[in-house]
Image (cartoon, rainbow, N blue to C red; front, top):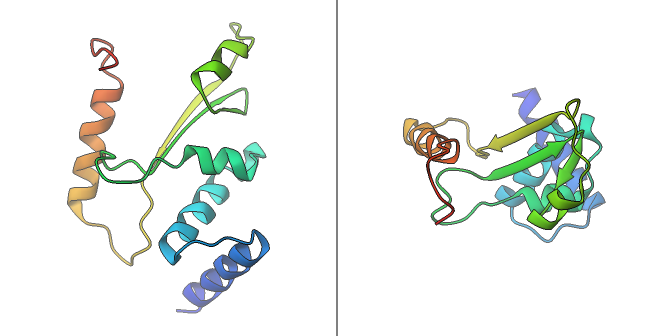
Length: 125
């Protein structure tokens, strides 16, 4: 229980520091993604752009591509990158829940979405 109290205090401090006007779930989402990606030194905007949460999101709340630890924010940004054989590309796909348990249906949704994302036979539509 002490861990929950400490975590909630950290989240409140994060919300105050970043002057967020978000509800508890949205704040938790920003905080969580920021913690997961903190070694990448992403800006707040990079984290904000990565959030794709909403209806019909396929269970995906965060979709972030990092090329050599630089966040890709748009298709145009990809065209600006200088890629070579030593480039490191990481794709972070996340589901954030501000609850004490996780339902199996959440995992099912994201599993279906990921299989569609990585199916190279799919076209954009």
